[in-house]
Image 1 (cartoon, rainbow over the protein chains, first blue to last red):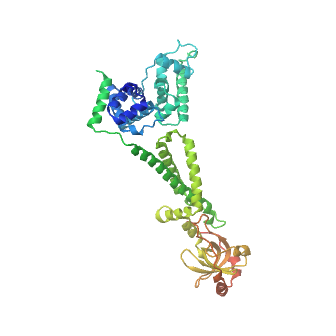
Image 2 (cartoon, each protein chain N blue to C red):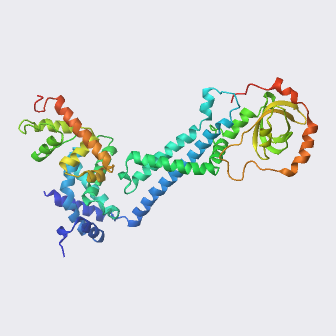
Length: 194
Length: 278
């Protein structure tokens, strides 16, 4: 018999419905990722992020029976987190406090490659400028970039998280990349244009 | 402090303190069914609106007297603006309800809207063909202060015998004339002028709504000389309503009409050319 930590996501959901104890495992399995996601899409402080995170898990618990096993559990959890974060701002009649991304080398390489900038010399690009380009995106473009490049989600997963058709995900991603590229070009950050 | 433990502890404490329990599966099942039902209802209302729009568009020529071009404002008044707006609103509601179902977000906006439009058009045409368009038009005209039904507009434009326009339902007809009941329930003895084509006379049947152009002959009893006659029967009537024949009345009717008037030659000089505005 598998230990609690070896349960698959689906098994864990079923187990949570039987006993609240299992819910601790689910929380511990996902709280780190979701906390980072909240920070990325909302640029909130630790206390506000914690409040949202708790609300997310309470909603998850309350709605366990609505989990559709044809989705990945992580997609469902990200969707609730996304909705709860946006609801947090709506309640305060505010917009997300800007965007904040930490670019590690993998993300930079992927983003640079996908947006077709800086391709001739990895040494020439400037991570700070690329971060600026991502952070200046409007919310709808920013969130698909975050999900694809920072949370490493597929098109279908992004579609499930944001509850938009896969075609719309593709359109937003293409436009977001075009805007990043345009930003880099107009600010002279692309190798060969500077 | 280890925030991982803190978060899970706090969440579990709140679940216990606030006595939060997972909602039942049936709750979500019924909620999903509810969204689909609301979507279906919205499509049905949209289709009803389509049937009324069709009724108006098809029947506008039966409201306007021949040769009369109303001002643009009147044309707008004749258009089924209310139903077009209703169709738009309920199509949007149907779209929203479908998007709220479990997998609804997977549908592309264009696919969903086109499908809704298609379903509404097909269903709306079916409803129109069984008379729903006419019934809804009447309902709106009778109950909404800013709406006029097509029958009322037809009455405004065609029921003006002093100006040579008369509309009504045929009670009985012969080749010489007919008995007509106007929308105010007044009975008219109508004689055909020689200019009325034989085909037009033969095509008439009892129960049919017709429009006449001509002149009043006598006020008591009410007699009218018809120079021109045309069917103003609305398309898209409920089944069972509309023209039917009453052959038993025709013999006595001929004698009645023949004795009421004999003034065919006044048609050329008194035929009207104008119609009142709304």
